Image 1: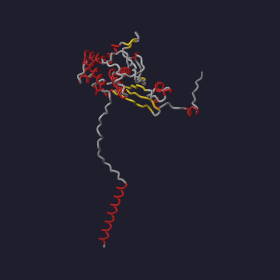
Image 2: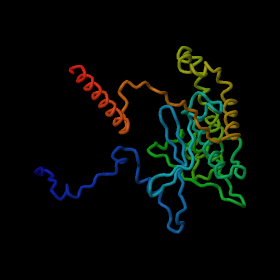
Image 3: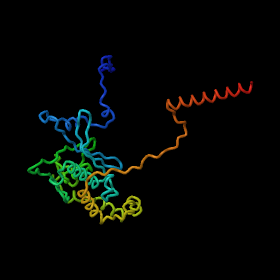
Image 4: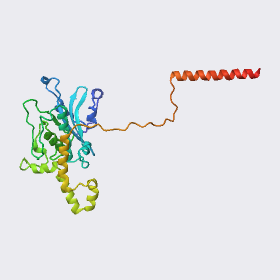
Length: 299
């Protein structure tokens, strides 16, 4: 069979439509987004909230967002770089830190809506699945999990943030199949394994392994932990204190920024119209005075 070259006609190029910018950049999954943002018409202008979790190399961002015709509107946000304020200064991107960030956002948004006393959530993390029950007055705050382009593998850190938000008292539709500790064979969640991850037990186990097998690597790998006196045996108590501190005061604190410095200017300052006019008059007076003096000398 002969090879036929595909010819793109003039009509092809005239009708060609480029994908959305964020699709071209590989940042947004619009197939998922349209299902997360579409609202039923009989709900009118009721916002449809999403619990959005994103990870960078050094930070975790968790936000409650609703879609609007003008763009996404952020109701509340929490970041793992806020955790040092609550006593957690190291390991800000692991499963336990993701749990803390989700817990912080959940308590923050409930306090913002004055629902924090009504919905306490799961005060002590046991690792078991938890879903908030509605009270007689206000229904729980509902949001949909938005994972973006993250691979939803079992035990992914994004589900740590989900568990934190659930324990905070948010109503998020979910299954326990992706939490750390879920067994594919038994089709059940091992709550003890999940609890171990929430309280940083997997980090403590790795610390013990390195301490025994590779002491030099332990000194470099966990140097920040060593500097702050954090050992494998006291990691769980550290996270318990962090959880309690978050529940005590989840409100956001504005960072204190130094005022901008006054830099030296080496270029000439631009004069206003009035200043230029006055300068010209002075120059003319000087020239006239000099011309008058010359004429007197000649005489």
